[in-house]
Amino acid sequence: MPLLIVEDDRELADGLRCSLAQSHYQAEVVFDGRSAIAACRQTSYELVILDLGLPDMDGLEVLRQLRKGGMSAPVIILTARFDLDARVSGLDAGGDDYLAKPFDLPELEARLRALLRRSAGAGVDTLHFAGIEFDPASRQARVHGRELGLTAAESTVLGLLLRRPGRVVSKGQFVEGLYDHADDKNPAMVEVFISRLRRKLAEAGAGATIRALRGLGYRLEEAADA
Image (cartoon, rainbow, N blue to C red; front, side):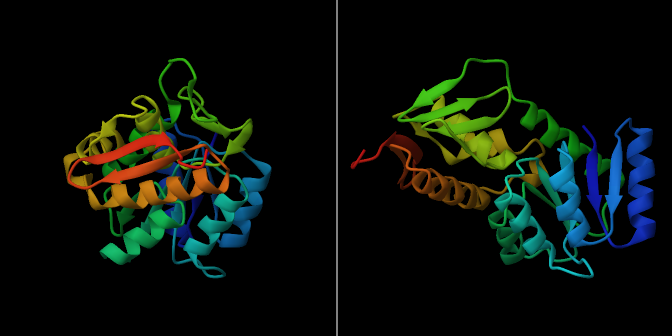
C-alpha cells in the first residue's frame, strides 16, 4: 500500500516524495485537506504524513474527519506548532506522532519506520476480554463483533492492556511500547491515548473499563455495570 503526503508547500511535498522513493516507499501527494479526505476514501494508505497548515481546512479538522470516516492508518503530523497544548490537540484528533518543522529527513523516516513496524503487529493469537477482540497482527479491534476504529497508538495501548487483563500496566511500560527513540518519550502523552481509548470502549458498549491507579499505572477490568 502507498503512503499519502498532505502538504501545501509543493516544493517540500515533491522533495519528500522523491526522497521516500529513494528509500523504496511509494508515496502519493495532495496539497489540501479536501483532496486528502477524498484520497483516503478511495485508497487504503499504509501511513499518512499530514501538514496542519493547509490552505482550505485546518489540518486537525482533516484528521478528525479521516478518523471519523474509519481511517486507521498511522498519521505523522508535520507542523510549526510544537507546544504541549498543540501536541495534545494533535494526538486527541487522532494523530500518532508529531514532528516540528523544520525537520531532518532521516528523523522523519525513522519515525515512519517505527509506526509501520508498530502497525504491522506481532504474530500472536487474537486477544479477548469482556466483549473485546483484538488481533495484534492486523491491529484490528472489535467490540461485540463490531469494528472499533483505533489509531496506531491506541492499538498499541489496547494490546498492552489486553495482554495483562486485571493486572497493572505501568506508565513506563506504555512509554516503552509507544516510543522507539529516547528523545520522543513523553509520559504525559500516555494519558491522552488512555483517555481516547477509554472513551471509544465506552461508546462501543464494551464490558470493560480502564482504571487509573495513582502512582502505579492503568488496569483493564470488567466494568461494574457489565
